[in-house]
Image (tube, rainbow over the protein chains, first blue to last red):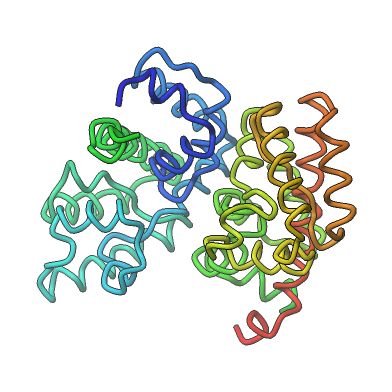
Length: 174
Length: 174
């Protein structure tokens, strides 16, 4: 799917295809449709970044709060979005040892208790070793730093999801 | 559920319960959790309004684009959110005559073609006669006026959903 095909999409198809590039935030995708036409995939990505960056801090925290825990209860109950399920599985979050799973649960709770939003990391750019290490280290940060760091990870996840969609067979058939 | 119980909710429960008071926009609910404690249900509602009003115009259009068509294909396929299904059914959108259904489809398409977002109206405060009349009349407006009008309707829908949740048995059990 080239960018001219993206630009030709009615908003309903655009939101249907790209609505989850930021987890559970179709509002963002739906908003940037106003900015079309995009000159490239990078321009679409930049419009998403611009929208996110212009949100108040509460809005950025809101984005983070729409993300599930890594290796949390929803991974095992099948309640994740398709994208999140794939990403967490690729990173080995579904095959943690008992000790790793306990550590992950404990650190996730510590992180959420400290910051009021979940630990977000681009799972596809990490594995269980680096995720556990990052989670442990990032629990020690300040809230503002973690909010910014989390949003940085959201943007990495968004980029990979966008690339996957634009290059996939599913959208080529449109 | 009184407001102190709402204020005591962890963000995950808060988003789980109130995440769809603005249709498919859990980002908004998740963002206003930062603003707790709320002194009343009205204060929670006001925080949601404030967040919406501070969005750029594209963001307001994004909210509207997260709404389904009234009496559209998703009503009959069962793909609506629970709240939207109930509201559209109460307003008689599922029992339109063939002529009414055709008129609704034609006007919905005209509206979306003109404005780039769907016709949004608080179905619970209307019936099929007033909905069809409003849709027909509002097709004649300017885009900025319709964006503002649509957001006004989003706020009415939000108020009724909030009231329903806070007063319902489901949340009283929390």
